[in-house]
Amino acid sequence: MTVDNSACFSSFSKPMINCPICLIAFIPRQKNSVYCSRACHNKKPRAKRNRTYKLQYIRCINCKEIKGIEVKGGNHAKLCCSRKCGFEWQAHISSEISRLRAIGLRTKKELIPVKVIKELNALKRIKAKNKSIRLCIGCHQQIFEKYMRIHPRCVSAYSAEKKAEYKTTDAYKNSKKANRVKRKAIQRGATVADSINPLLILDRDKWKCYLCGVKTPKELRGTYLDNAPELDHVIPLSKGGLHVESNLRCACRKCNAEKSDQIYQLI
Image (cartoon, rainbow, N blue to C red):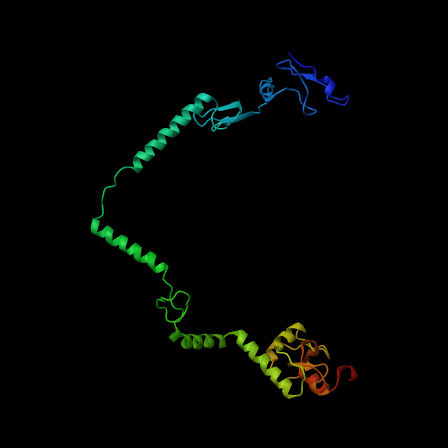
């Protein structure tokens, strides 16, 4: 006997609907509920999918014929023209794999004497061990310490060798020139002097005199000709000029001598 509980609900309660599977009236828990339980939901009829397959022309790897097929999936879907060819091809591949495994399990004939094989294995072990051995960068002998790159006895000799190699490079010559020019500027009374390579200033001004515009070839650097390139301070050091890049210009030897210690704007 069922009890009518409709009086317990207000006028705003949810309406009852019938389950399409078991035909029992129930109050839905959600707005889009259609079935009364999970069991009825699982019994609902499944909609058939209308799949469309694209026709493709392939060359079958089993029968070697060109055929148009509808590709539907599978491991050999785009390789074989039919299921029969696909099963035949899989059987062929599996037989090849079993044959290769059988070949790999065969015992190799010992064409080389056992004594020679042992010596070769020993040499391989020695070679592998030498790869992990660290050598001193000075004397090229083995280092047993963990974080050391050079023996303490090799430090002085190695540093002397590296210094001798550095003195033959262009970087050392350019830095030596820059330091020499800086030292001369300080001796002449410059309050601020930077280490500037004269060749960089001459390259910046394209080897032209900023006073008369004549070309000063690089080959005449250090000569006593009128168009020999020289460095000139726009504001002379005697007038408080600085030995910095913005105060240096390329000038020919003749104009530099005529300008002397005058300021460029007052010439």
